[in-house]
Amino acid sequence: MKNLKISKQLILLVVGLMIAFAIATSLQIRSSVDAIYKERYDMLRAEVQSAVSVLKLYQAKVTAGEMTLEDAQKQAYTTVNGMKYDPDGYFFGYSYDVQMVFHYDASKVGQINKGQPDSKGKLYRDELVKLGQQGGGLVEYYSTVKPGQPVGDYRKTAYGQAFEPWKIVVVTGVYMDDLDAQINSTILTALSGSIVLFFLAMTAAYIVIRGISGPLNNVHAALKAVAEEDVSITIPHTGMNNEVGMMAKATQSLQEKIRERHAMSDREAAQQLALENERENNLRQQQDEATLQARVVTTIGQALEMIARGDLTVRCADLGQKYAAL
Image 1 (tube, rainbow, N blue to C red):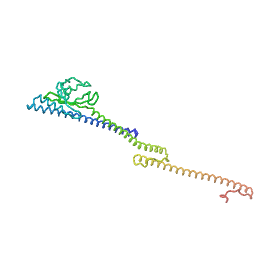
Image 2 (image 1 turned 60 degrees about the vertical axis):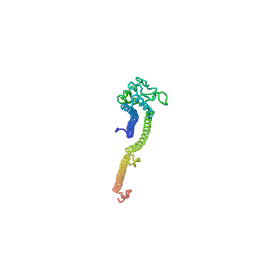
Image 3 (image 1 turned 60 degrees about the horizontal axis):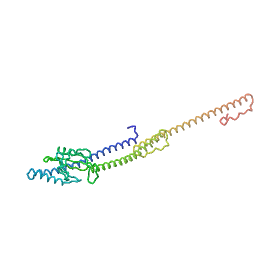
Image 4 (image 1 turned 90 degrees about the vertical axis):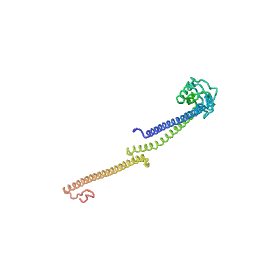
């Protein structure tokens, strides 16, 4: 991680946050889906319990001797058959041997449904009766018919609860495709929102990365030039008040130190050149003086030699202004 560029680290950070967001969204969606299904299941349970409570009322009349069992069952089934709830909910009952005891469609009463599977091969009726005798339970199955829809496989959920005094299981079921459509819509909306949010986050990350890596690259290029002792370059981003600005100011300070060192080197070179010029001038003057002195000595020597020979008319050649007195 330490060796990764800042831009890649930022990208990893954004991707990590988006993954965490996706996981949180997925968990939230799952929780919402579970809550939606639970609400539907609780509704089925409550409706069946309401129907069973009607049977209990009539059984109480039988126990009190106010009605015969046959009359009580007949009136109770009629009452329950008249009970409806949204969406398109109704009740029916199976005996413990899975025979239809009551149904709003009288043609189905008396049918033996034991061992009769749904379109997927599931013996849901037998399972409902079994769960009903165990205190109640939910069973999912498929129906090939749905009002207003063509023949097909439509998912349904039923809840069954036994009424032990009459040895029957009261059942109600509802189609689940409306919930499935609602849940799919919720998932699609969440997924679409997540995709939009992902692209917005990546766009924002790109802008932030450009805002960080761009100035950093500029400062890096300037620092490289300063390291090569290029003091003519202008250090960028020195006006920024963040870490990039601090780096730029440090680079500018380094550049100033190099510029001062260059100026000092130039001054030292100029001084050295002046000293060398002065030394050369002194040497040249000494050489000229020695040459002049040698010429003076030679000239005077020649004159003295001629005088020694008795030539008193001899005159010295020009010795120059400095030795004219001689």
